[in-house]
Length: 221
Image (cartoon, rainbow, N blue to C red; front, side, top):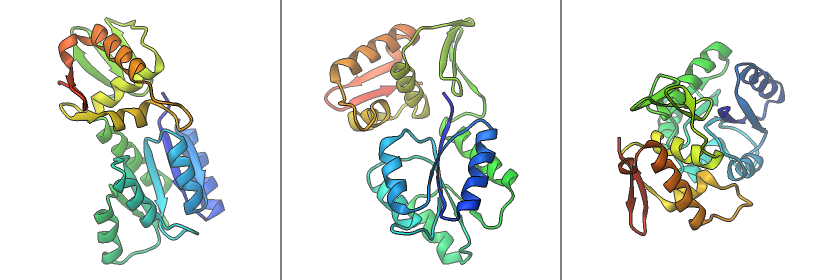
């Protein structure tokens, strides 16, 4: 699956420049020019990383990230801003940003920061995660293979496995799982989720996914 980036930037020229650059590097980019549009996109799309200008119309980048973090979403975020005071930097990190880049910046520097954060979010610097016994999960292509033979998991099952691998040994509650698996216009299905878990266990080993009754699941690394 192509990594997705949410770009909030009200400078139309810079917005378009960054979007085109990142798309050339293989990312899918959703753009917003103000704080209201970015909130709409964030709730409708699965986002892997956010690039947020601070001074934008309606809702500032600071306030947007504050709202995102208050809802328990941990999507990596980089602030892109002309603000340069120590207080602003401290505020950004206090609100939950993962990195900061000041304008003007080189696109190559931005790419390095983006790639670093995306690798960290998957807990690995390798494009493939070794699950043992000949099992490999490709985090970019979202595929699971056994001795180079592809295992036929469905898209939502692969997204769920990816989520588990991003949070090894962590309890993932139903709410977080539902946010990842279902789009805003889809109704989460407990029955379907149980089926996805069953198929993942069949593929990687029953003992790898623990059920935490009435709460959620945990991937045991």
